[in-house]
Length: 360
Ligand SMILES: Nc1ncnc2c1ncn2[C@@H]1O[C@H](COP(=O)(O)OP(=O)(O)OP(=O)(O)O)[C@@H](O)[C@H]1O
Image 1 (spheres, rainbow, N blue to C red):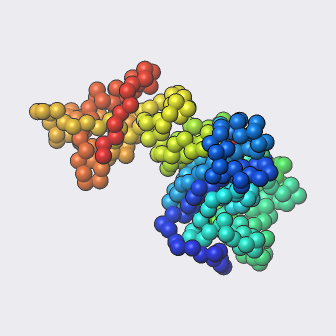
Image 2 (spheres, protein in one colour):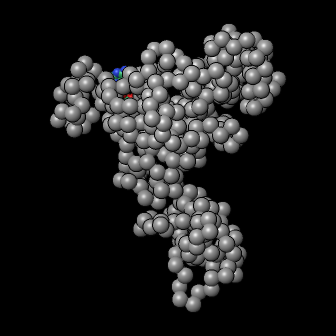
Image 3 (cartoon, rainbow, N blue to C red):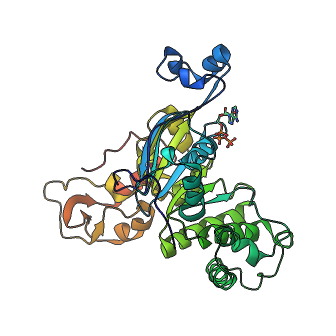
């Protein structure tokens, strides 16, 4: 890839850093930041000034190779946020740094460069070109950046194979089901070999079974290509399934950032607690949230498991073991887990329990 850099700043370890990012729609929006009006609720601000606070003072970092999910209800600011990251929408204030380059300071030509080489987006409504065959839709981004026909055909064919579209190369988008069209969207995004892949509710228009297939496809592709991903969804189960970490938004603000097990085990407030109340805890919590110190005289020579194993996956082995299972974080002994500890989590799925404490 012939990539040039964009306004280099001091590089960080992060694939993406967002610092105090704001988007307020309306006139004189920039005057609101730093004024007492910034503390008004979204409704109050709109009533007083006519401006809409879409994204309010948002900061986070995404690690290379991480799947970072942004979740919230309709209107919470997810789509605005993801568009701010590539300046499809101009921020009112704040910084976005991607791969060590400051996007928020980039010129028009640097932004074009960014969008052609470094970031690719998968949209809810696919965004395919109807008069182009599948293979040419997939090659589109390569064509835009001026790659030769042979090269782009070859790369597009590799992507066809990667996402399971063999045999459909010569079809037109309207000859394909929604799920297949979104595979084309995925292949097109991957074809440009971006540093960061962004997904804006990509599976919301698909029916539940196809949606599940596509989620599994994202997990598989992530394992295969290891890209950094920013994934927008309003669906908690999708967020929990895909995310290494989840950012939960409400009215433009961050309510919580955490791993799936943290969000379920220690919801930041009632809003998140409400969201996660239906989640089967044993499907998300790991042994880290269940482990306890051995009791006096309790045997500590049972089977060994790692703290990151999900309770549901550990249940059978724990229940079958003669002795309590020893839980380790790498080489570090954290404690033990027995039948009762596992059953307590399963019972808590029906009957809310006090919040567990993670082991340090
Ligand atoms: N161009 C715009 N002008 C004014 N207000 C806007 C504009 N775009 C979005 N908004 C408002 O900003 C807020 C956040 O919208 P946004 O679309 O980012 O939310 P969302 O979480 O993505 O919701 P959805 O899933 O429904 O798209 C909403 O109140 C929305 O009405």
